[in-house]
Image 1 (cartoon, rainbow, N blue to C red):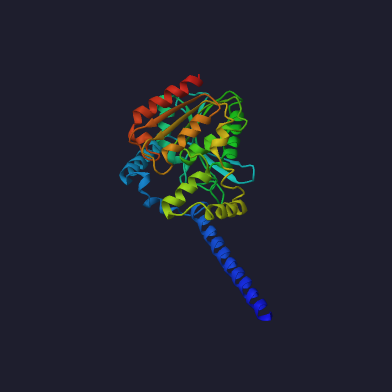
Image 2: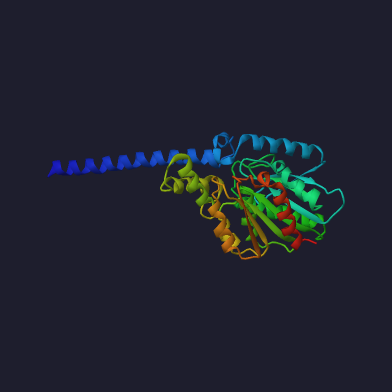
Length: 321
């Protein structure tokens, strides 16, 4: 009887030790994943992702961005976020004074000035002022983590409030975001926006952080979502204050009241093209969908610049005087 008791205890202790060991390993990997994807660190792994298109294309765009920036004077702005972080951005005034403003939101691991290609559409074609914020955890903005659009939506609201006050209420605002920036403006769409926000353009946005990271976990590591995605989400909640499932553009667009133009490349395998369809379908406001043939992730403006400019012009002009 005593031997049986020792045997049973050894099984229990062995199983417990194995579970503790496995739990510790999962926790360690979850912390690694948090640091890889969410903590403010260099994201060198992105340079190895073929889904992001040809390097030459992006180098050409970077050169074009630099040329545009050097030809346009700007004002650097700062304000404090809801949680005390100091946020930063770049304001480009139109050549002819106007009450029209485009807020252009960059993607993952980028910075505000990366949106210069899109800024040219608004300044040269539409005669807008342009503001390009650095998202929290990016560029010159403070923050130790990437918000994936969720906390950034509250930062965009602060910038909107700033410009409504700066223009004494006489401003018409368009939000335009690409990739994570696209998800950011969609997440913003579900908030109580002031009447000065007239239209939103979301280019290659994901449905939710949970779904996008599920997809990336499989693409990069050939792993299922359980358990690692859930434990990494817990780590994100502890370190950054949000979970992957709550950070959802899909739920936010259901509450949208501002017209939205959805743009997505038909060859996007980074934020897969199929994600745009439920976003468009469930959007609660006036909406339009444009799928761009031959465009990989974030490359619609490169593949068909004239088409991109014209689609943007037509859509925005319906809602902005």
